[in-house]
Length: 121
Image 1 (cartoon, rainbow, N blue to C red):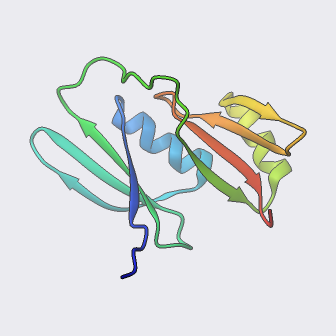
Image 2 (cartoon, rainbow, N blue to C red; image 1 turned 45 degrees about the horizontal axis):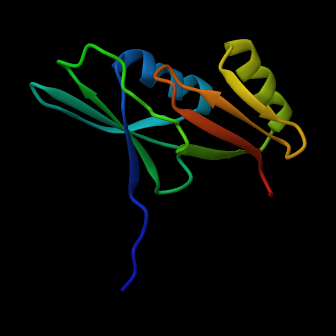
């Protein structure tokens, strides 16, 4: 028996703002979208792997999600770490840096953390 990653899901409050953030901050592209009367799903991919990020927008939701201690995060490798860091700094989305480990985290519009690591680690 073999299992293969398909996607990870996060719920978002401001759908368009979140889609725009993931496209700008991580160069993710929309792969497919499913729209229903009470929710919309958009699947984003990096164009290199089969793994996707599913953003779920519950249309009636009007308050931020409780992320608890927010210990769960996504992680991305980047081929030009310095350029990515400069871009994310300009965007104002860096929420934590660990220079000793050579990584940093950005925060999306809903407060989810995303780890950024240099490629080749």
